[in-house]
Image 1 (cartoon, rainbow, N blue to C red):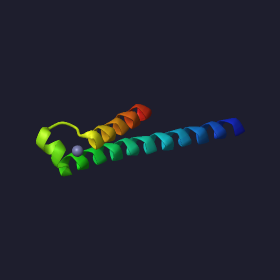
Image 2 (image 1 turned 180 degrees about the vertical axis):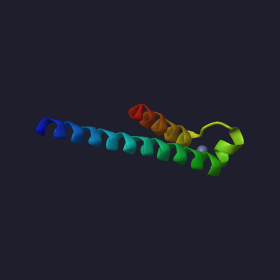
Image 3 (image 1 turned 120 degrees about the vertical axis):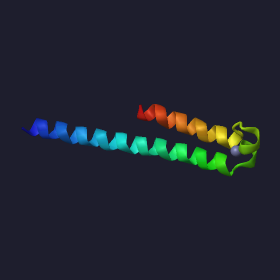
Image 4 (image 1 turned 90 degrees about the horizontal axis):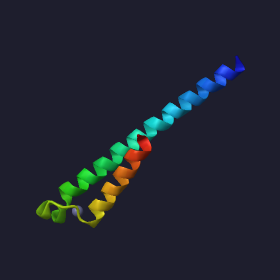
Length: 67
Ligand SMILES: [Zn+2]
């Protein structure tokens, strides 16, 4: 009885952790999009400037954590 309660608590904790990671991935992607839309270097070249590349790197890293 006591064991199954502990298992359920751990499961809920893991699900909460995953939701946080998904939100972080979302947030990182949004930061990248907001940057590219407001950055003249990104817009005029169609390429990622240095800060944009860094934002994309953060997004990729958080996506891998969430997967
Ligand atoms: Zn840029």
